[in-house]
Image 1 (cartoon, helix red, strand yellow):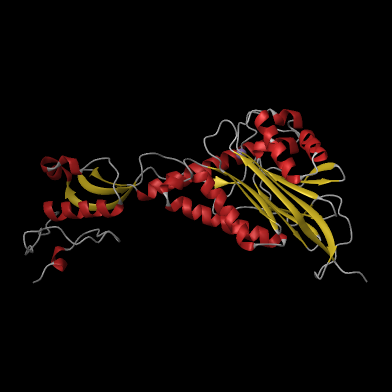
Image 2 (cartoon, helix red, strand yellow):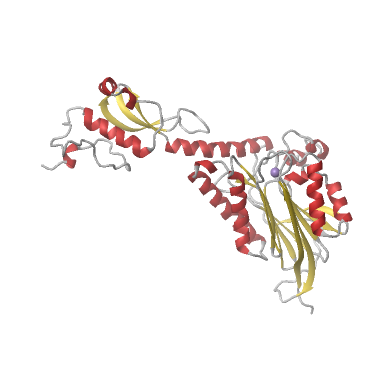
Length: 397
Ligand code: MN
């Protein structure tokens, strides 16, 4: 009885470059012996790199080696963290990232990914792709609607169908490969795989036994091909050893085994890509919608409205959030500026509506029975909104 096989990453190398067109690098990489990963961030301002860094941090925290389930769980948690930050901070609204990770664990290469950053295996002088892109063109190729060659020059080749940050839930693909002595794993952003063909990547791997040199040459080739995107490459050389690990790896699995084919969607690839883009847009719009309040006239009365005057992704354009019963004409005659379309925060809108209610009165209710020291403004109680303020409650008998 032999000891179980243990995979060890004995050498890692990483190279990244901003490329020749972009103004900053939103790719992030992780090259721990126990866990290798690449994240390709997207989003305005610096948001993309924030999302990519969150994804990398969640994996870095694991350390490795990790099971496939543990990689998937960390990626799902990263997704939640990105969605959370993106909805809490307007500067990060709509940010997202790809993530592709490999961990050598119990004789296997555990792979998990979302998006179009690829994992390859360089084995026996052959390059095999371990991941299948979550992209529109990859889906079209899988459906036989376009060829690999057509995919390479397709105008929408950079449109992905899955990303972290697009939705509160994400479907992470995982795969599993029995590792072999001498394997080299390669993870890259689409800055490499969309610019440099698999054959050209294989040629570099064959020519350069020094991993750091190989990583650098691959990045150089992406830039030589136009450098239209950030490019990142992570390489890891695998050796096997007999170890104290619990599981044996004996049978060679010739192809990728999808561990758990998650729910399959019936959406067409174009619908999927639109869904991702829409989700990002809706995230931002929903954020704006939830925070925009206006005090305005409706049917002759002053109301507080919530939302923005736009209808996007099923959000109602605006809803009446608070009715005051105050005659809008009376307010308009004295201070027309207080009734406008300009959005305010909820607290500010409620304060204004409350003041107008108290100042201009409504129905038969008295304005303020015994006003305290000439200051008619009520205390700020923005949440929940006082629908019909009761002046008596605020005054002493
Ligand atoms: Mn990219």
